Length: 269
Image (cartoon, rainbow, N blue to C red; front, side, top):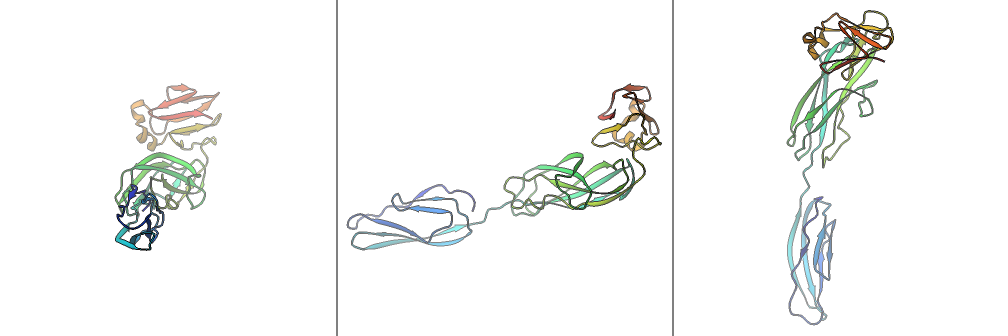
């Protein structure tokens, strides 16, 4: 079902008086039969077993018939769904690191190709691709029918206190039967503390590998940042202060408009 057949020409009859007329009954949804060329073609749309009668009639009304059965089976399609969202800690301070986890299940009756998983932050529990993208996109490998895979990503809490919801959406694959369930629900995270760069001694907040500071603002490098980006090797340690002044970022002996540290960018807004 859902795939075009190779056109099939049914056999011609011999004998009879005058021109012969052909018919094929019943009709199979999605298929057509050309009574002149005796050609059967098309794309079946409805699964089922069809008991066919191929009949020939001459001008005298004499007939002959051939019976056969056609079976149309439903195509096997994948159906990816993201579920079981969870976080390692649902109460955080601004900039704190945490782990988001979820599962991707193929609910369909056919295998799914490898695809991409994307993570999002929302102001409500309904996650969609229009929410704020966070973290690094992940890969979901091929999954057999009813197969399940687990995914996780390290994230950082946003720079402002509040309640946030985190979830994930998987990109649709070819032939997917239902794409309405490709996003998980959101898991709630409570964030406390002030906004980075408020003039206090706040932790640096990294979003998508970038820390931004306003003019005159500063923040403190956290141990989570040191571990994530291997900053010890660059003589940057937890507790060091990054400052934006005159459009230039200063951190230890680093002094530039934009500091690049093993994939981490620190810059002025």
